Amino acid sequence: MSLASLFDLTGRSVLVTGAASGLGLAFAETMLEAGARTLMTDMDAQALDTQVRNLKSRYPLVEGATLDVADAVAVDTLVDDMASRHGAIDCVFANAGISAGRGFVVEAGQLENIDLAAWDKVLRINLDGVLHTVRAAARHMKPRREGRIVVTTSIAGLRSESLSGYAYVTSKAAANNLVRQAAIELAPHNVLVNAIAPGPFATNINGGRLRLPESAERMRTYIPLGRVAQIEEIKGLALLLASPASSYMTGAIIPVDGGATAR
Ligand code: NAD
Image 1 (cartoon, rainbow, N blue to C red):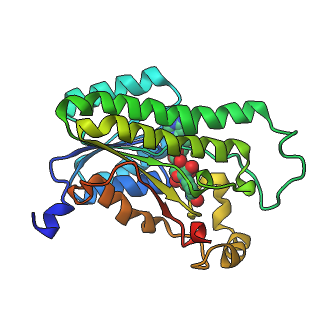
Image 2: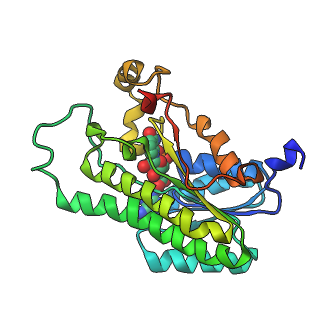
C-alpha cells in the first residue's frame, strides 16, 4: 500500500458527534478532506446548520443531522438510518461532550458542594453519550468485520485534574476504560476502538475559557510546550486513527497535550 493510500478515506462513511464546534468540527473537516462521506451531528441545530452550509461548497459529501447523544433511542435511530443510506459505517467519532464550567481557582470543599444535577448532566453526556454512540456503531461494524471508533476523552481522565471538577474527570476516566473494554471485545471482529485524550485546546468548551489571556499565562507554566493547542493540531491524529495507517492500533488512549501528562 502506498503512503498516500494509507491515509486515503475515499469511499468511506464517517459519523461525527458534537461536530458543530471545536474538535468535532476539526474531525469532520479532516474526514471530508481525506475523501470520506461525513455525517456531522450536534444537538445545537443552528450552529450545525451554519457549519454544514459553510463546508458544502468545498465538500459536497458533507451531511448534517441534529442529535442529542444523551438520547439512546435517537442515537440508534440515526445510526441505523445512516447505515442504510450509506451502505456502511466505516468510522465514528464519539466526540460530543461538555465541561463542568469551573474557573482557574481550585475551590475549597468541592467534594461536599458537588451539584448533583450538574454531575448527572455531565455523566449523561460525556459517558452515557459515548456508550450510546459506540454501541450503535459497533452493531453495524461487527458483521462487516471492519470499523473504527474514536472517542474524545481527555487527559483529565488519565489523572487527577482538580480544576476540571469531579464530574468531568470521572466521566473522562470512565470513558477511557470503556474504550479499553470495547477494544478488547471488538478486536476479534476487526473493529478498532481508540481514544484521543486532548490537553487544553482553544475551543468553545467552558465558555471559551481556554482562549482567554489568563489561560495563555497559566499554560506557559502548566504545559511543557508552553501554550494552549490550536484546534488544527488535533487533525493529524484523527486522520491516523480513521485511516488504514492505524490498522494495528486498538485500545490506545493517546494524549495530544503539549507534554502535560509526561510531567
Ligand atoms: P466545544 O464546546 O467547542 O464543542 C462541543 C460540541 O458538542 C458543541 O458543538 C456542542 O453543541 C456539542 N454537544 C454538547 N452536548 C451535546 C449532546 N448532548 N449531544 C450532541 N452534541 C452535544 O468543545 P470541544 O472542546 O470541541 O469538545 C469536544 C470534546 O473534546 C468534548 O468531549 C470535550 O470534553 C473534549 N475535550 C476538550 C478539551 C479542550 O481543551 N477543548 C480538552 C479535553 C477534552
